[in-house]
Length: 474
Ligand SMILES: Nc1ncnc2c1ncn2[C@@H]1O[C@H](COP(=O)(O)OP(=O)(O)OP(=O)(O)O)[C@@H](O)[C@H]1O
Ligand SMILES: [Mg+2]
Image (cartoon, rainbow, N blue to C red; front, side, top):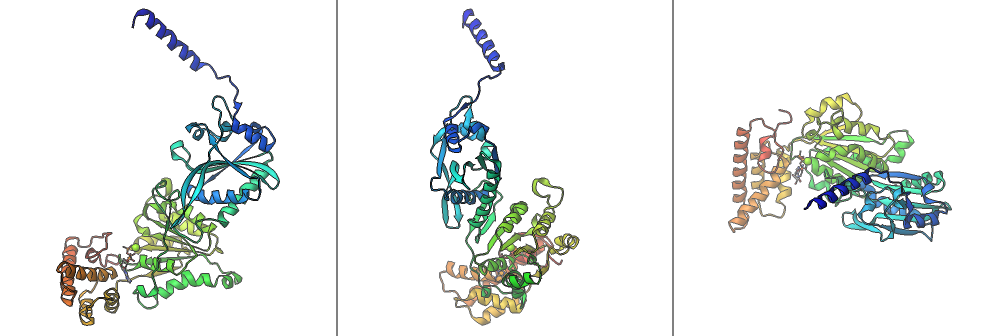
């Protein structure tokens, strides 16, 4: 670079700096999108107030259905997208209608595929502008999906209407329609800890399980007691309401790992088709407030908190001041008593929960122990899991007697291992395989128990469950 070039570069740099410092005096110009909105509303789009509503990402499909439904009352309703490059994601609604440099124009609508059930999806508007008349007044509604990349953690619905009360009435109507036509209603859903992973903004639809009462072996009366409290109260909802009795109820299932707590939950889900169920577990327990809100909107509902002990004493959402368990219990309390909502908590550390429950009485009104199976229950379990095998009743009885102290899941694993031995040896399954599998599992279990004496684990598949047998009360 010679000296004249260098001088030129210095001048240019100074010029650029000067330009950057100069205030931008250009007035925003109406964009083509703005013109469309102005023509529709019949007033200058810059002057029209925007009423903004934020909606949870997992309600995007509900919001879309609600908007489409409300708009469909107007036969001339239109839906347009917004063209103008990626910049449209960074601009608020006013800037899309009037801008200094970019002329946003009507363009193709942007869609995203969202689940609407365990086996169904919907092409859902992710960025689009609805133009229609609501209660006779023209309105423009811009809906945008949440986009963490662009700093938007919620779905936004921006309503433009010349009269403010039209916007608020429309938003109220949208919320009603969202609850009425919700894709979540009647489904089994779980919150995932990964907010923007698969599913609907952190919500996953699960297939409703199919576990009959005969698939569960529990002491007499236990399952009926739980069923009565969760299902029976719903069936008698009208009578109970007539007597002024509340329907909200909380049930705690506690007991050692592998004894059938989750299986009982699955049975209750099977037995209540059509009831919305929301499952929270592990990290997703943080979404307790959101889940309670959802349950209220979707009654009758079942709200399940699995393995609450694992996070019980952790700080709540955003490291709130109180342990998560208290947040869960407070959520139970925050739900109106006349709502048909059942809360189901499971834990294998009732000892950890007890003090918290004692401090907040009335939140859990039934606590049910799901114990280790006694000899008779072990017989029934082995018979259940050996159904369809040639194992003899005598061998199963012997196995039941020899396996004092094991969990219910042990019985299932034992039969599986016996079958595995037979398969690996290319011989038909026989009682010898059962005996050998039991020897192996009991050996492994006692070795484990010795090395972990008193330790509490989490994995209960197979012999490990033996290791922390009795840990709850020990
Ligand atoms: N009472 C039972 N009757 C029949 N099968 C059972 C029973 N308990 C456990 N099983 C078998 O063991 C598996 C695991 O049990 P489950 O997941 O219900 O245990 P859990 O009590 O929830 O344990 P954790 O405390 O570890 O969550 C079940 O899917 C089922 O196959
Ligand atoms: Mg479980």
